[in-house]
Image (cartoon, rainbow over the protein chains, first blue to last red):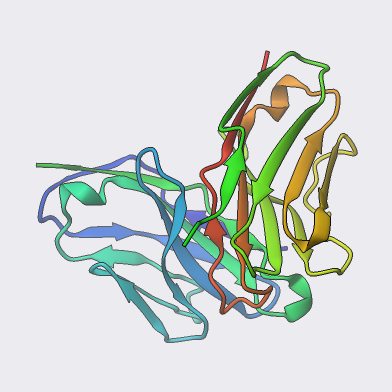
Length: 115
Length: 115
């Protein structure tokens, strides 16, 4: 079956620091990969995605590259802000149409950025 | 436009009682998903509807859980004879269709507490 493993948090860092959250996956097929973010008191929202190998998803200064050879999709941001404090979820979905785009999530990583 | 809405936002119930959770997807979205977010299990898929097709119930944890989607729009998740382990945040998401290129938009969730 499919599974996603991401580094456990919490991750605490100072404003303008570099952030990396590791994510690796196991999939029976050729998945699409996602990062979702959950800000305090808000619902889950898509941060970025990549649908094929070597694709780079980017949004709000965050980036992640689909690495099929290492089955990874690590999230990075060069200079974090206090407003980036949130829980980040790595997820995948099977691209086979019949699978219906069900998402398999990692455990989530809480990030706290201090001023 | 309006996003995915869920009601109630919070529900406290006694063990053994039945509960119904409601989801209103984004208008025009044909795919609707239910997920559960709990401390012990993280974020997990429960059930998925696509148009008028039979739902994919592969994530439902027991036969106490059921869901329906009326008229291809509103969905209700029903939990019968609730147990304490059912305590979680139940999330609904919708997307334009079931393909992985389409983003899933999440509602704010219903926090269920079984006492």
